[in-house]
Structures are given as C-alpha cells and as structure tokens.
Image (cartoon, rainbow, N blue to C red; front, side, top):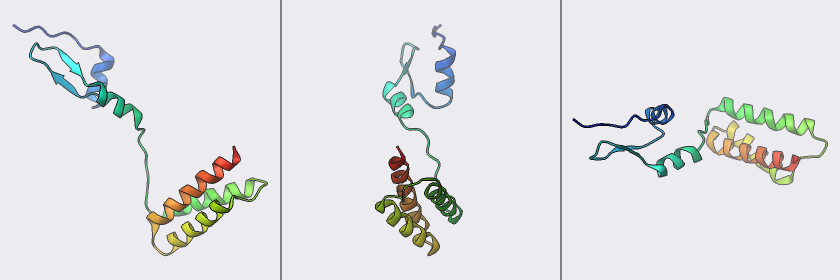
Length: 112
C-alpha cells in the first residue's frame, strides 16, 4: 500500500486552477514546478479588444484627459492620437488602438 502525503488546501486549490504544474514522483509524493509558478504569477491577465467600439472608448478617454488637464498634451501623444483616430475611422482598428493606447500612456505619464 502506497502512502501519500496530504497537500495543503491552498496548494491544492492553486493546482486545481492550473497555476502549478504537478509531477507525481515514483514515491507518490507531489512536486510542484516553481518555474511554472513564477511564470503564472508574473503575467497578469490582460483583456484587450480590437473592435471599433473600443477605439471610441479610447478616444473618449483621450478627450477627457485633454479637457481636464491645464497643459496641452505632449506632441508625440497628440500625433499618436490623431493617427490612431484616423486608422480607427478607416477600419484599421488594431493599429489605431495601438496608437491610442500609446498616446494614453504618454499622457498619463506626463501627468505624474
């Protein structure tokens, strides 16, 4: 009869969620791959969308930031937002979103 050691609840829950890669050794004990744990924890899930509606959301955010700040946006942010808006209008949503998000990042960094 083979004895197995109980796995603590937290580790069992994480393993069940797929955050640990489990390997059962011949002795019946469980080993957790720490490289997989580090990888799973270092990358937060990022939700993105490539729809024209998301272009509109980003353009609204840029407009709100521009309206609420006393200083004009940095030149690079203004150019990127104009290019992004033009691309979104012409159906190039992915490229437009990339430029709009970059413009937002520059504008937020300029506020700090």
